[in-house]
Length: 327
Image (spheres, rainbow, N blue to C red):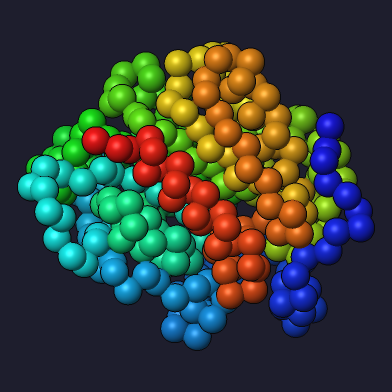
């Protein structure tokens, strides 16, 4: 059951941004137009001017790109480290982060929260610049990217300066699918994870994905629309694929997973996705905490310049990870 109310409205800044930024006609876009739109959006988000919206990084962290050489491909990752060297010589906790967006998005849009986690936990935060979905790239590619980077970093833990016994996965939106599926896969084959954080998670790409009350109540929300979700679902799960394979909500077994924090903004079409996943985790006996942020919409944690609730969510995530990753 949805806990949202129709009288709530997002902050004024979000509403103004929505008015100024026209939503594309997604169903009518060609493959080339979608790629061009994606590239343009990612350039805007990566610009210095966008910091006014996406937030200024924590000054106590350094940020840089690195290449991860996998057996069959190379992937860029954005790495966040505390500027001041730790007192202890042992490795720092590893936080593997997966940005959202689905068919758009870049790790840069998450500099605000990831730099804070690196500086304040402290931890080494590795944000995966995974492959984005399109007509030739299903979501399973991004799932593989997240998993393969996690294994690579842990296989070379000393080089990365991380403690393989203190690892958490964090995902936002579509990235929450990648993080949640990594947690499920790690339960079967290792490594042992300490925690998972899922922010405004989208965890259902099956035929029930659009059936939730929040999906109807906030179908035209300023930061995520039902139309955009339908395009993502079509690209993420090509015809003939089993959508359950990339839908954590429909995993056969959710027991024995690392403790979870699920962050739900109430003005979000997928708010009930997060609530439903919390219910399934609890039923399976996996420790889970749910935190809801009123008058916040989808992707709010990547827009702290416009959504005041982002700071409270960031502090809640930091406190949860600090507890779970303690030595």
